[in-house]
Image 1 (cartoon, rainbow, N blue to C red):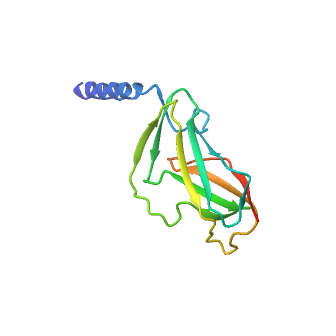
Image 2: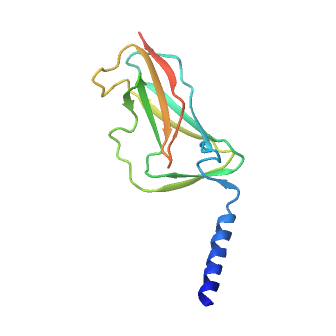
Image 3: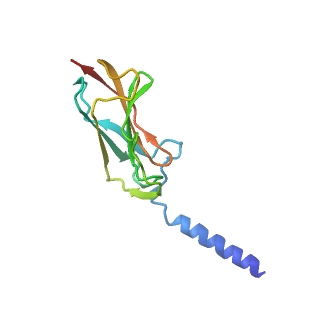
Length: 156
């Protein structure tokens, strides 16, 4: 009888502790889509070959509820430049990120902004030439949230 009573009490405490966060959504909405919207902002259509390019990712909640997010490391965002399907540059390549879990709550009125600057270099064997490139931002939450790719050109 005592075991049953203790079990019921623990179950009730668990239910009540989960119920108090009704105004907070998970990083995934009900249909499996991210509860946050991430997009690349302020990107020009063309840049001079060899110039430094500043990228900006903006993240906003999609719902009227606060959203809990978890970062599995100290790195919060990544930017990747592609030419076709090949990654040309990665903003956190070679960067050491402390492996520590960070949690945050994003309220409906919050806007998160992440920046990176590409110096125009590449570790790709093809190098960087004139042409069409894409940039994608990734919010390094668990699970990660990716922006749509945005296109820009390197010109003379």
